View 1: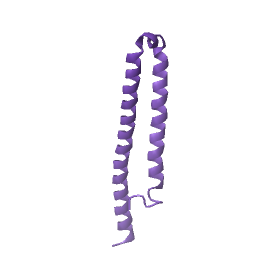
View 2: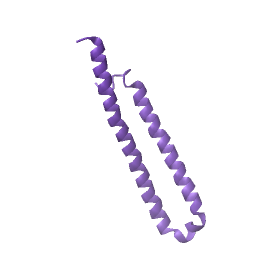
View 3: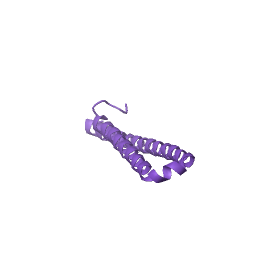
View 4: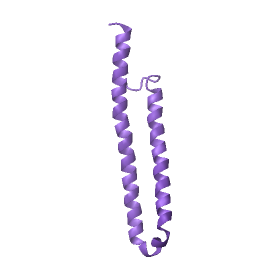
Length: 91
């Protein structure tokens, strides 16, 4: 086999594995957000009389957490994509 064919096969394999990793990263983000939404709903349910006046603060806090986690997950995916050939990540 020629080295071009091997490189093409390796690149195809790596990109399909990257797709799988991207799905895992998205699943991780979905799990994190759902757990945080559950925790915040429990907190709001238990303290609604007090928390109703400051509901917007809970929304801002939750939004900031989701934004930070999303940025982190995207950076993990970009790091994997950047270094997957360099470190022979999927071999």
